[in-house]
Length: 183
Image (cartoon, rainbow, N blue to C red; front, side):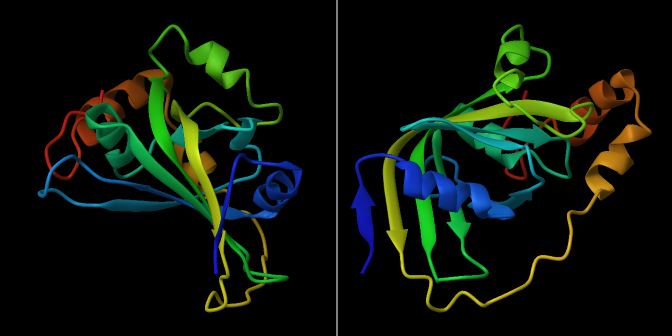
């Protein structure tokens, strides 16, 4: 049986910080459109900013569904699963917003990350005002061993200039798979 918590307390903060991967889920408004679930990782790209506030760095990628969905309705869920140790799943439900690399507030949002990896290819900071914190058993989540971080995202974008990333956003991240505007 799961439990609902009034906030992200110290114990949950430690659990979240120990996870090498988390999942982000968003969906457009209405009955049409695709629900999106994206895995995220890389140490230093997620921060807990308070008992009801978290943020993560959103790098250029093959899609930009999360940003489009947040612009549409703000709904977002983050999920953290224990793949080692005792079974546990933690979900953070809330309202999210994005601040793009092109916006004035981006530098302030980026400064909230104490030890980010290379930030050259960050396209936005996603901030979530957490409205519901819950856990569940995770009994069916497999036990897996973490081997290493992948550096492919950073190395693939290291070859791109700032101007190349502008073109990337305009051509490859301009709209969601459902045609919703991103930036």
